[in-house]
Image 1 (tube, rainbow, N blue to C red):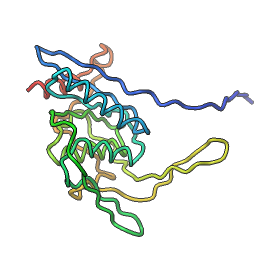
Image 2 (cartoon, one colour):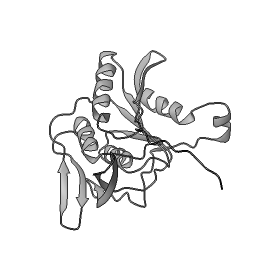
Image 3 (cartoon, helix red, strand yellow):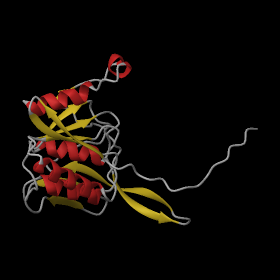
Image 4 (spheres, helix red, strand yellow):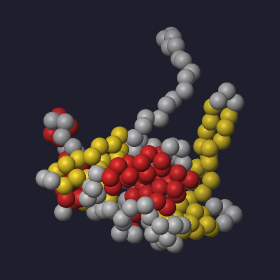
Length: 212
């Protein structure tokens, strides 16, 4: 039999990746979010400040490969991006149906493009779907995973933890995402040739949409 040594250690979430691009005299931001952890909304807010200071004409939120995270962080992010009293989401549990509305003024009215793929799930799909149905963002990439759930983190002994699904989710306008996913406004597949040549045709399309 084979013996494998396993080391228990803390898993650190990667910080978001961000840049300011300049394309044909137009500046725009790029914000790659790997998960919806406790600091995600703060990092997005700081990026929006940088984009605004740079007098950029818009920004891209890259949610490709993002499998989701904390519901409360998703709510904060949507609150920062949507107008007051816009219906953000409907959460249906065994006990109740809860409708959540945006509360306050958005921190920016700059154009937004969101990148998704078939590994974008849960909070990523909710963010993309809600922004799309409210005309607040254009979506580029591949149809998302269609795996949407509301989870509650539970602490376990030895600093371990788990997330338990407690409810189902729909967008504020009642759109079901579970088993359906978000369909991009501009579908773009990464081809084998793209991968071999380290070319990101989805990101290039997002830049083109922002430019126009």
